[in-house]
Image 1 (cartoon, rainbow, N blue to C red):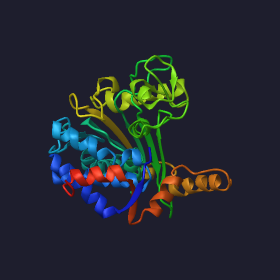
Image 2 (cartoon, rainbow, N blue to C red; image 1 turned 120 degrees about the vertical axis):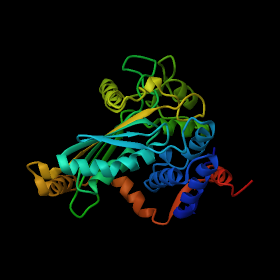
Image 3 (tube, helix red, strand yellow; image 1 turned 45 degrees about the vertical axis):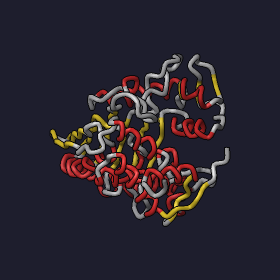
Image 4 (cartoon, rainbow, N blue to C red; image 1 turned 30 degrees about the vertical axis):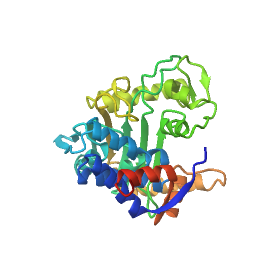
Length: 338
């Protein structure tokens, strides 16, 4: 199936996304936060976490699966900032927690923000990047509805569960490492399913544990973890950090992010901020990061993590490329076309 792309101004796309969410019952403040996060994903060429999500988000708000009017509740205990998303979107909850997290990290050297009763939090690297822009080292963990079976098993118990890391650099943008414990983001399989396309071998198994290239069978089965048993172990670790510590739903307890059925998913996120000023490297830490990055760049075939995203972001200064079907749906939901 042909997936024709069309260029659209970033400010227009942002307005359409916010309007679509508001029409579904999302508050203007929350809609703006969500739209900004989706546009950031599009600019980094991560379409699986971009505007394709608006349809799912809007339908879940309309059905009451996401509390579109929720106001995140923030409280602090020592160096831990706790945010209750109130079964609303993750993006406003993270926005509410970022400045308290930075403040506590600069006060104590290490601080964490724990988000509970949350939802899909998109590109994990974007939040830790915000910490690195303030001179902090950031670590992030978040869980998602069940998609990965324990190694050797068939029934998904873990989410694709991103892990993110960011470190400040001198005159360069922060170094950002963002990876999923799965071999591929489940959103990519979902997009292949919507297009009617097959998926590559090695991405998933079906419900009987057999390798599959059929996107429908993969969505009913399990995404394979990266690194086989090691990836499954990392998924377990993320579940315990992101959901266990925050009192959120484990992956196997969470409802789908791709439909409006069932209760709120109640996912969890945990971010840790570290102030290098409290450590031996101190103010020289960014220079140490630069030194390591320079050694990587010195090898012609080596690629620095995040380089592709930064290149895509540089290209998307004023416009992004959006699938025509997604754009038409976005315009309809925003009330621009009947």
